[in-house]
Length: 238
Ligand SMILES: CC/C=C\C/C=C\C/C=C\C/C=C/C(=O)SCCNC(=O)CCNC(=O)[C@H](O)C(C)(C)COP(=O)(O)OP(=O)(O)OC[C@H]1O[C@@H](n2cnc3c(N)ncnc32)[C@H](O)[C@@H]1OP(=O)(O)O
Image (cartoon, rainbow, N blue to C red):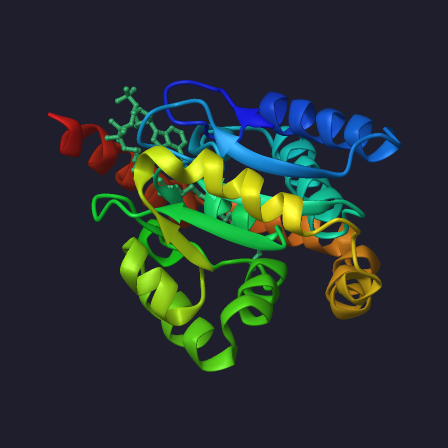
């Protein structure tokens, strides 16, 4: 599955819905042995959630958006397929979350790229299931530090903390993803055993999580922080 939503593969409601439909189709396809997620765009795996979906939108629309974010996570984290993230560019926040749902992460060894949960930099708090996914990936203490600082990691740092499993030359990300994937032939039952408690936690609190998100994101102070962050993104470009 090659992500293609220019300019930066931001995860809008529409794009998330497309991703969920694609994953669902693959999940039902008995001939499909697994899934490699990568990006068709240069330099960016995914810029994370589409910030425009969280800025100046109605509570109803925000709720619909958040349900789609949850759905993407539930489908990928709970997938019966062997999944590999072939991270061929930067992958902040929701992009990092998406790659952490996979069984294995291969990243292009380009020091210009970065990965991490940087929500704190936007003035927002990473939701509990983002935090849980990271804890399951890199451990409690690293997650605590990482979330408090909104830390982004270059590939070497990401490998060191276990946020990615392997670094490869940029032009060989696809090759190594396929080679690794071929070595794992059957999805292991231990995957669902390890992930079930985290998945059950969100499933049981799904509606409350949507309500929390909507009331948090529509607050004036949070809207102001997001607006300032958007301005900063645009200025940085010039
Ligand atoms: C009580 C608690 C209850 C509930 C929890 C509440 C809240 C928690 C909610 C949400 C969690 C949030 C998760 C997220 O994923 S938020 C998104 C975070 N993403 C980022 O911060 C990434 C920002 N982008 C970048 O760093 C760079 O764009 C990137 C490195 C990805 C690519 O750099 P490049 O130089 O190639 O491109 P740019 O020139 O910067 O960007 C091009 C263009 O795209 C726009 N852009 C970038 N990222 C986003 C995005 N995530 N969403 C929307 N638009 C984005 C950027 O502004 C440029 O636009 P323009 O100037 O118009 O061309």
